[in-house]
Amino acid sequence: MGEPPRRGATTVQLLLVVVIVVLMAAGGALVWLWAGGGDDSETASPASTTTVSVTEEPGTEETVTSTVQAAPGARLQEIALHDRGDLAGGLNNRWAAQLSAKQPGVFAEGRTWTEADILAEHEQLRSRFPQSRLVMSTQWPVFSLQGWWVTVMAGGFSSPDAANDWCRTNGFSPDHCFAKLISTSASSEGSTKYWKK
Image (cartoon, rainbow, N blue to C red; front, side):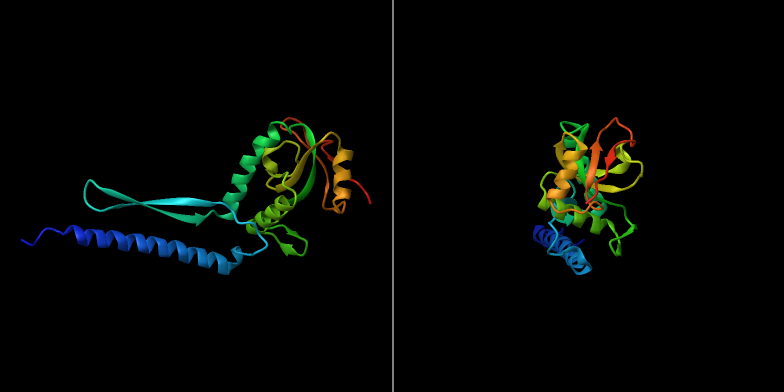
């Protein structure tokens, strides 16, 4: 019979597994950057964490943690879920300024939009206007179209005219900013007010 495995050899194997996991995460990040995910004009998304358990010997376990960027669609859902609390709470039944409405595959502004494009636009608007919030139209009865990611400036405006005045003051065109009621109970009828230059 051979000698029992030495502890040092198992530690080397464990370190090799850790190095491979880290290299795979770094390689994925590089592919993401090369694919256009690392555009400097975008705000970085918080990273999600992946945990991998590696068994060294029976009865012992070593945990390795690596950081991986969340997919744009998952990140959009995460933001909308977080923002729903703000909007359904103190801003429910208040007027907002709708800044953008996009869905993956829609052709607008000279291009076909992807989830990554929608996320980048939302983050850019949120950086410029920190009170901006993201909603998924399907989850709000005030939207007649389903499946659209909508960015609103949640200023808690008391009237549609106040929201439209905000649009004018901030240099938006009537096509890119207009009053939208944010409500968990109102219907889409009467929930939008457009303005003219």
